[in-house]
Image (cartoon, rainbow, N blue to C red; front, top):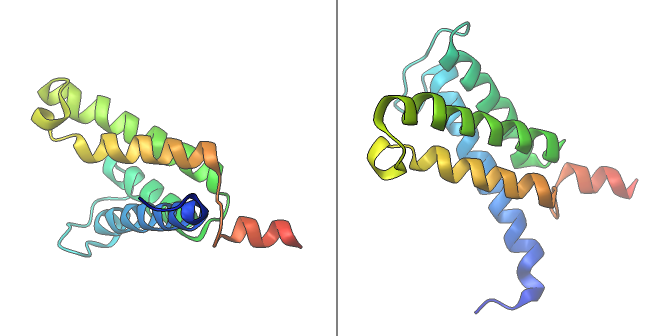
Length: 127
């Protein structure tokens, strides 16, 4: 078991990793990187790419963390219900919505907890 004194550091890593992964998904859509296909900016996927890129970066660096995480969580909830449930049913493993579900609740947790250590929000609060 990890001692509780490491909780702030582990949480910071959680926030950074989830933000980074979300940023990568956004870059797949926006720039066609990492095996993705670039989508048209003025489409539903283009809007999702903008949210994922911007919010992923903001969460990763810990800047405006709560609003960015709230927006990212909402985007993933919309993706789950609008895309996955509508096309293939309610169960995440059947409708391939497990990533949307995990991102949604991870960002909801980040939104409630805030930036924590190793964040620009914390650095600005010290000034």
